[in-house]
Image (cartoon, rainbow, N blue to C red; front, side, top):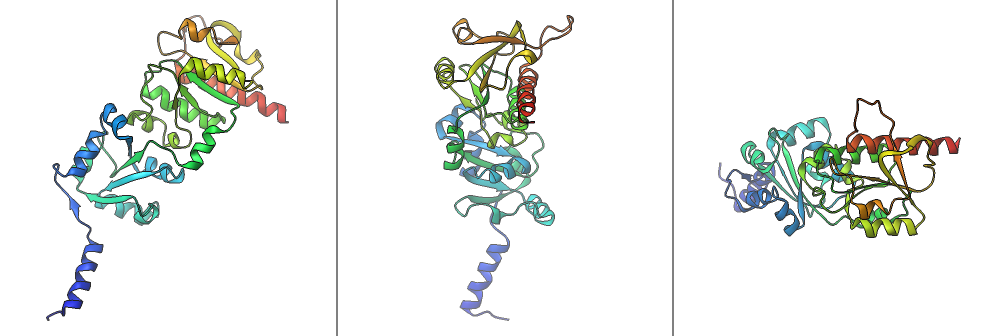
Length: 288
């Protein structure tokens, strides 16, 4: 059976829609573009970062975070479509969506066993997220030179759970868009991304706005005996060296978490979590 030119054109269009071009070469410019984002210096230079895994991509969509492109495998799109979780129609038409082979997807990801999708996101948040960031704060955590991505991811999750307004990072801290940070945050990164700040300047501004700055340090007042109903910034040191004398001088008071003598300290994420939850508890009691 011979097709007319018009019928052949329709057939080819349908074929293209049903089977989008498959990227299988590691030399493809798009593949090289994504792999550049494995490096912090490239992420900073390009203003882009990686979002890996179904859950993180769905969180980015829910937060309406701007995406540049999405790369997926055939198995991933079939599974997501069958479960009704996500489809290509959920992405903005401006977002470039490309199907890649399993091996290429693995080379794009920083994880050992990617689940079939990697997206490229833009640093600049959308207008709604930016307005949210500028709202007056009531409860925040500032960390000096935080190094561990797992601790930062856990702090992001705890802030979201306890109703905190954000995590703020002083000089020497890990890059906020590090892929390990995003994974450790379980996708909540997009709800309230951590913000690098000049800590002395930022803390001074918080104090002028009426917020108390409380330094978590051994020898301070028991944290559950302190009034945390006031707008508060919890100031935490890094994993080993605490905070610098300049930054410590900006604290209004020092608070401590009581511990048994056999325990020298808690890690940064656990400390921040306990402090934020105590603040949340005190504020809930006030409402009753």
